[in-house]
Every structure is written in C-alpha cells, then in structure tokens.
Length: 221
Ligand SMILES: [Zn+2]
Image (tube, rainbow, N blue to C red; front, top):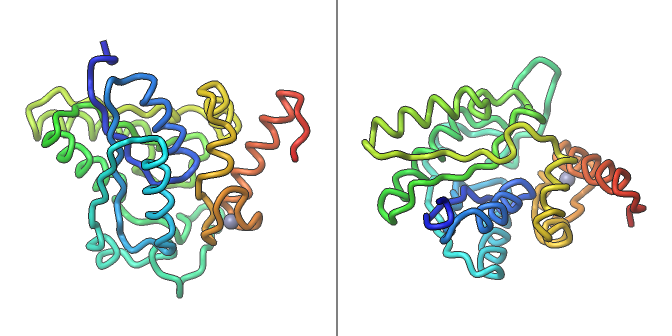
C-alpha cells in the first residue's frame, strides 16, 4: 500500500537521515528530501545533503530556518560555544523544540506537495536527552498534525528503537553501507565520512560501526 504513496524525509546528510532516505526509497513510490538550513555550525552539512540527494536523484527542498538560530543560539549553530555534554544535563548542542519545528514544517511541505508520510531519523536508543526525540513526543506530534491539517499524516521513525550498530546493519541490508560510510557527515567538527574521530558524534558512529563489522566478522579498515 505504501508503495503507491509519496513520502518526505527530514534529511541532514548525516548517517541516520541518509539511512532513512534509503529506507524510504524502498517503502514509497516517491521520496522527497527536506533539509533545514538554520545556520548550522557547519554550512557544509547543507552541501553534503545537496550532493547526496543529487547523487541518488531525489528531489530536495532546503528550507530557511535561520529563525531557529535567532531563538536558540547554541553549540550547533554558534562556533563560539563549545560542544559539551555533562552527565544528567542536556548537551550544549540542544536546540529546544527543534524536532517539533522540523516535523511541523516537513508536514506543511508535505501537504503542499501531496505527501502524507513524513520520515525522521530520531531515536530513543542513543538518547542524548533531547525530549523531542522521544517516541512519546513523536506520537503526540502525529496526533496534533492530524488535527491541525485534518489529514491522515503518518510520522515514520524507522530508527526509533535501534542503536548505531543496528543502524549500520540497516544500511548494509539496504545495500548502502559503503555509501553511508563514505558520503555522510555526522562529525561536529565538519569532517565527512570517518570524521575527526574525537567528538561525541564521531565516537558514537565509530563504535557502532566497529561493533557491527565485528559482529559480521569483518576487520575494520
Ligand atoms: Zn567528529
């Protein structure tokens, strides 16, 4: 049934959303990617998203969300704020309400272009404390969007209950492990693929990959 429908993927050019993009391409007849430009710490993120969408031939919308930076300057949007994460506290990369805003705008775009399925790579498993990454929030948001638009919107979260290792496995099963490994940008220091190897995002990504390759019986190279 889903095969006949159109979906929008919230797409940042990172490992998770790129895996979601390939997941969506298997599930839906037509897939469109949307990237939010909020003056990210690394504008390279937008270029990476553009080039991936272009390479796989997916229609790509970039929405200007610089307003978000005006409302919530933080470590993801400002280079003069360090990336820090103390136990029990939200990391300095937290943008309050970001997923609420992203899902809302993606849904509005979907309304305009006839896509009622919205795919997002949020997950609870590697939960860094962002309240709007929780499954409970996404379900609540889904109900609200249905009511707001009076349409049967469906928010899809294929990564919600899987960890980084399983996300790599998913990419492998979709036949895009190397693509995701080589072309995506997750690193907070703006280095594509393996990244800087030191920031929290790189450590999480690498650990997941090492574990996956180990479980597969492949030496990491
Ligand atoms: Zn890094």
